[in-house]
Amino acid sequence: MTSFDPAAAGCRVCGADRKRTLLTVEAVPVNSSALHHSAAEAVGAPQGRLELTLCEACGYVRNRAFDPAVLAYEADYDNALDFSPKFRQYLAALAEELVDRYGLAGRDVVEIGCGQGRFLAELCRDGRNRAVGFDPTFRPGDEELPPTVTVVPSLFDPATDATPADLFCARHVLEHLDDPLGFLRDLRPAVASRGAALYLEVPAGEAVFAGDGCWDLPYQHVSFFSAPTLVALLGRAGYAVTDVRHRFGDQYLSVEARAEGADPVPAPDLDGFLARAREGARSLHDRLQRARELVEVETGAGRPVALWGAGAKAVTFLSLLGTPISAAVDLNPRKQGTYLPGCGLRVRAPGDLAEVRPATVFVFNPMYRDEIASSLADLRVDAEVVLA
Image 1 (cartoon, rainbow, N blue to C red):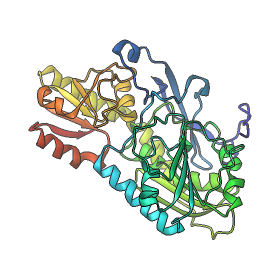
Image 2 (image 1 turned 90 degrees about the horizontal axis):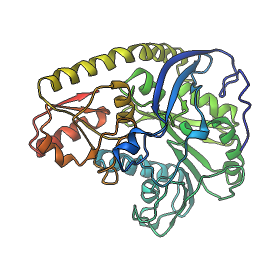
Image 3 (image 1 turned 135 degrees about the vertical axis):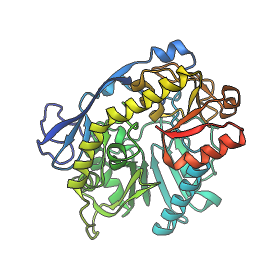
């Protein structure tokens, strides 16, 4: 892959030297999605520093303190979201949209960073097309895949892998890459070779820094992209952007592109994002303090506090909170019985809340609030559902 000179002063997206520090966090687990099988192992998990800088020329946010040498993606890693019915509906609808728009019936798809293959299974439902996925964390048998889906349990290297496709997609991959521009430049010849389309999806910087995604700050996300940033990145990498939009309650940002020959999309609002990002970073301390005070009041009165969802947002939240929580639950059975990195809290099944009887349940995503409230009602747990 194209190497990047770490001594270069310019922004890794636009090349400008107009960076300012946006947010600093002294210690978070370097791998918030690792599965730890003892509390001691989880508490002793490696920690890293966040020093997020904002490029005021294009809106790119990067962790300047990121060290790729401390982070490895292995099989004992799980960031799956597809145990939620709402999220499965989203994946199914997105697959139908892409199949229809790009006429993928009987054609080839490559997904970079496919996880356990759930999205590929949706794209290839009923054998309508063929797909190859790449992911070093793939565990055979975790997901029932169609016979037309093949998963390679390794990283995808765009400079050397020659797998042909009519659609290349990388969902929630680009934010993990130390050199996203080099990756996209290396991928471009493969996209161009068959006139393929490229679909990229990342956490929306607008949601992370100016919305309800403020806890989505895991160490493994070295980059954060807003709409103007992602469009600028694709342009600099030599692509023509054909579509840019926010998805899944505006929490995700998607861009579609070709290697050449498309009409330009309207330029997204950069100034608005810059202003909201600065304000969002400033307000994080106040939001954290409100959560800490709620936990201290409730637990001090003997009323347990729980959280629903043991993913990256929960790990970041607990790392910053510094106050014990009574219980953490998650729908993902692979996470149940493991321990959250950093705090060492054991992850339990949602049904265990009937025993814990929490007065308050923190959630980290407004998209799941109603789904979680309904599940709590089914469990006969009378708890207030609070967006952290």
